[in-house]
Structure formats: structure tokens, C-alpha cells
Image (cartoon, rainbow, N blue to C red; front, side):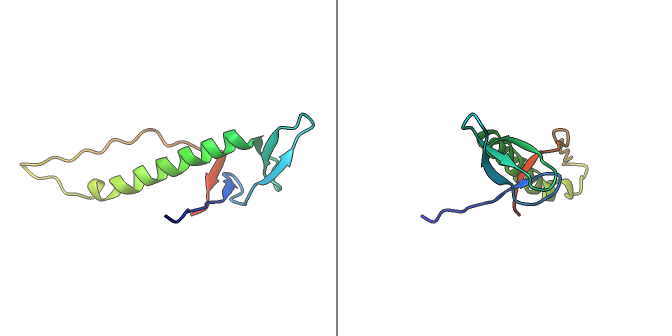
Length: 90
């Protein structure tokens, strides 16, 4: 089985975050442009949530374009649009 690797990006700058270790030994994800940062664990979790949200919205896209008729009414309800501090590359 092949492994797919995605880069964690800053959600604001859309550039790859750097891994740095803080004085307490905690590994951090830090945007080199804007300074957006969090623990690497939290950044990966948020980027994973972003990816799941993106896939869900893309999967529901065809249903949104499906025309309604007298027999079938299609209604797609999305969760509110979120902003993510960390995302994955496309």
C-alpha cells in the first residue's frame, strides 16, 4: 500500500510551515511569513479537519446541482464555513 504525504500549510499564507522546538522541548508548527503557530500535533489535527471538510464539500457538490422535480426535492445543508489556521496542500 502506498502512503500519501501532504504538507501542512499556513491557512493564511498558503506556504509550508516550519517545525521548530520551543524552549520547553515542544515541537511547534510555525509559519515563516506571518508567525502563525501551534504545537505540531494541533496543526496536524486542524489540517486533517480541513481536508475532511474539503472532501465533504466536494462530494456534496454534484447533489447541489441536481435539479428538483415534482417527485424529488434535493436539499443540501452544509455546516458553517470555517476558517482554518492550518491546511494541507492540494
